[in-house]
Every structure is written in C-alpha cells, then in structure tokens.
Image 1 (cartoon, rainbow, N blue to C red):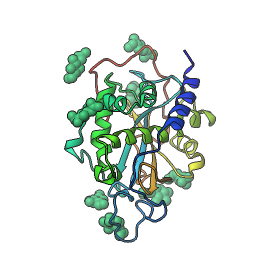
Image 2 (cartoon, protein in one colour; image 1 turned 135 degrees about the horizontal axis):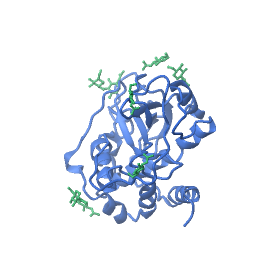
Image 3 (cartoon, rainbow, N blue to C red; image 1 turned 120 degrees about the horizontal axis):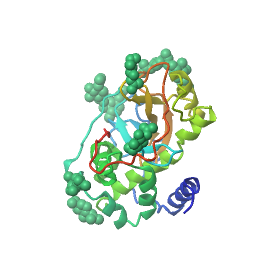
Length: 277
Ligand SMILES: *[C@@H]1O[C@H](CO)[C@@H](O)[C@H](O)[C@H]1NC(C)=O
Ligand SMILES: *[C@@H]1O[C@H](CO)[C@@H](O)[C@H](O)[C@H]1NC(C)=O
Ligand SMILES: *[C@@H]1O[C@H](CO)[C@@H](O)[C@H](O)[C@H]1NC(C)=O
Ligand SMILES: *[C@@H]1O[C@H](CO)[C@@H](O)[C@H](O)[C@H]1NC(C)=O
Ligand SMILES: *[C@@H]1O[C@H](CO)[C@@H](O)[C@H](O)[C@H]1NC(C)=O
Ligand SMILES: *[C@@H]1O[C@H](CO)[C@@H](O)[C@H](O)[C@H]1NC(C)=O
Ligand SMILES: *[C@@H]1O[C@H](CO)[C@@H](O)[C@H](O)[C@H]1NC(C)=O
Ligand SMILES: *[C@@H]1O[C@H](CO)[C@@H](O)[C@H](O)[C@H]1NC(C)=O
C-alpha cells in the first residue's frame, strides 16, 4: 500500500499522462475568444466562451468530523460555474441528471479517475456516488462548453468524463494543505489563525485571493476554500487564468479561526448528513 503522498503523485501522473486526447472537437482557438467574464461585446459561441457561468470555481473541503480523505490533504468539492457577479445557475439540464457516474467513468475506461476520486472526492455523508451525481447534475450541466451540441460526433456522456477529468486536473495543482503548511498554518486543536494570514498563504503564484469558508457552532472552523478562474476557450481544454473572488464576503471571522485536525476515527455514516451544496 503506497503512502497517500505517493498514491497522490502516481495517480496524478496516471491520469494526466494516460488521458486520451479529449474528443471535444469544436476547435476553440484559445485567444480567438475573449476571456470569460471579460467580454466587451456579445459572444455568440458559448461552446468556446463560458457563459453565463464565466467564473469557474474549484472548490475544496476540509472535513474533520466525520473525516474524509487523508489527514494531510484537502478533498474535492466540485467545479462550479458562477456568473461574473456571484449569481449562479443550477440544474441546467434535467435530461443529464445522471445516476450512474461510476458506470459512465468505467464505460470510458477511466479507472484512473475513479481511483483518484475514491481517495480525494469524498462525501461526508458516506455516499460518494450520490455526491458525484449531485456535483455534475447541479453544477456541471451549467458549464456552457459541456453542452452536448458543442461536440462533433458526440458520444453520449463523454462530457461527464471531461467534467471529472478537468476538475481533478485543477484540484491536483491546488494543494491547499501544503500551501497552508508552508506558511506555518497546520491543523491544531489549540492554535487559531487570522483570516489575513490564511488568505495570504493561499495566494501562491496565482497572485489573487481565494475565498475561505468556516463551519461549526460559531462558524470558526475552516472547512472550505474556493479558487476562482476565468477561461480562454472551453472548460475542457481552454486556458485557465486565476481570478479574484467576485465577493469579499466569507463566513469566517477575522481572527480566531480554527484549523482542526481530521478526526480519523470518525468515518462518514452512510446516508448521514449531506453538507454538499
Ligand atoms: C458578454 O457575452 C454575453 C453572451 O453573448 C452577452 O450576453 C453579454 O452582454 C456580453 N457582455 C458585454 C459586456 O457585452
Ligand atoms: C448576474 O448576471 C446575470 C447575467 O449574466 C443576471 O441574469 C443576474 O441577474 C445577475 N445577478 C445579479 C445579482 O446582478
Ligand atoms: C447512464 O445513464 C444514462 C441515463 O439513464 C444512460 O443513457 C447511459 O447509457 C448510462 N451509461 C452507462 C455506462 O451505464
Ligand atoms: C486579498 O484581499 C485583501 C483584502 O481584501 C487585499 O488587501 C489583498 O491585496 C488581496 N490580495 C491579492 C493577492 O489580491
Ligand atoms: C461559541 O461561542 C460561545 C460564546 O463565546 C461559547 O460559549 C461556545 O463555547 C462556543 N462554541 C464553540 C463550539 O466553540
Ligand atoms: C474586495 O476588496 C478589495 C480590497 O479592498 C477590493 O479592491 C475589491 O474590489 C473587492 N472586491 C469586491 C468584489 O468587492
Ligand atoms: C472522534 O470521533 C470519534 C468517533 O465518532 C469520537 O468518539 C471522538 O470523540 C472524536 N474525537 C474528538 C476529539 O472529537
Ligand atoms: C442510503 O440511501 C439509498 C438511497 O436512498 C438507499 O438505497 C440505501 O439503502 C441507503 N443505505 C443505508 C445504509 O441506509
């Protein structure tokens, strides 16, 4: 059994290297279209320009009790298309609310993605498949470039594979645990941190802030991070540009933020409370 760390790097290597060239064949010449959320006039082709969800957020969880994922790694929440003003659409295509994400990925032979998801894309209610269905059905179907009409020679559900692959590619480059650790921000039952120091640690070479969110009785426990991007071209194979959050609001206080260790003896209870949104 490899350690989680080596599992992580080998899993990333596997899915990045073995990924077949995306079958997405609407060719979006990257800089032919404006950066999402930055167009100065109407853009008709929403297969090469994400609209209205021009802000793509790679969102992550720190689930401590019940704990999910490795002790030293955050987990995936999803990839959300927000409009450029903080509003968002949801459940954009009722015909694509799939109840078989695992089978879809198996059908496309993407066991590499499933292996990775089984460690890093975990539901604190114990139902990973339901969580994946929810993330695709509520958010993924609202990413305009994943519309089935954007594909030539469309193979049913291929866009679902593209959604999970792209989310994991982004997530694998956003190692929140290490970003915080490098700034001396480590899980602790006694220490607390300030909003400013956590946000500063998350800037990295993105040169923009991330949004942090807190939970718990007094909303002091750090539990989520949202990394914003705008995109040139499609969500599948376009160029992601880090973006400032479209809001400065956060559920966390300015001081006294707790970054609790995961309680690894608390495992999710099947059909337990769903936290996902
Ligand atoms: C950006 O493109 C969308 C989609 O065509 C359009 O509705 C919107 O008005 C455009 N924004 C501006 C500032 O022109
Ligand atoms: C945000 O922009 C969308 C159009 O892209 C519009 O439908 C929505 O009402 C706007 N929301 C707010 C809060 O302004
Ligand atoms: C997944 O479910 C959809 C909708 O029911 C169906 O069309 C598709 O064939 C299923 N895919 C697999 C691989 O079972
Ligand atoms: C992050 O947000 C803070 C407070 O709004 C601001 O002072 C700081 O310049 C921002 N950092 C970056 C890299 O944008
Ligand atoms: C929440 O704050 C109240 C008042 O400061 C305190 O008594 C209580 O212990 C806090 N609860 C938690 C879970 O930190
Ligand atoms: C957030 O705060 C920064 C610094 O005060 C400001 O420059 C920026 O415009 C604010 N962003 C929003 C979306 O209000
Ligand atoms: C960790 O979880 C176990 C199982 O739910 C629980 O009994 C224990 O009290 C928890 N530990 C802490 C420190 O909360
Ligand atoms: C969890 O919920 C699903 C769907 O509602 C149900 O089929 C399953 O039996 C439940 N599992 C448990 C352990 O209660």
